[in-house]
Image (cartoon, rainbow, N blue to C red; front, side, top):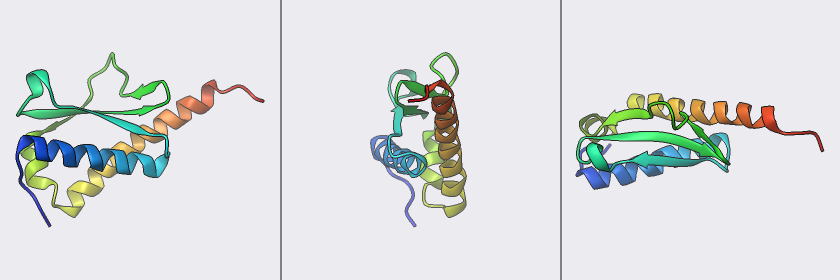
Length: 105
């Protein structure tokens, strides 16, 4: 498997990773991977989006992942499985919230 990479490369990989696993729960799922500002070169903040809803909500901290951990571990199956489940759980939570606000036709 692969690991390592510079901050931008790992960020692109992470974005693709979270989008692909989010879409396994719901094809409408999108990701926000924050890699700017104080995080630049240090960490990534992850949120999932479904329609108008964001998880974790914007008034709460995002899921945090350090660049060092992502670069080192992204080639490991167990690490990827753990993060895939975290992402998918966020989308499942968004879907439950989405169902709760829908009105019958």
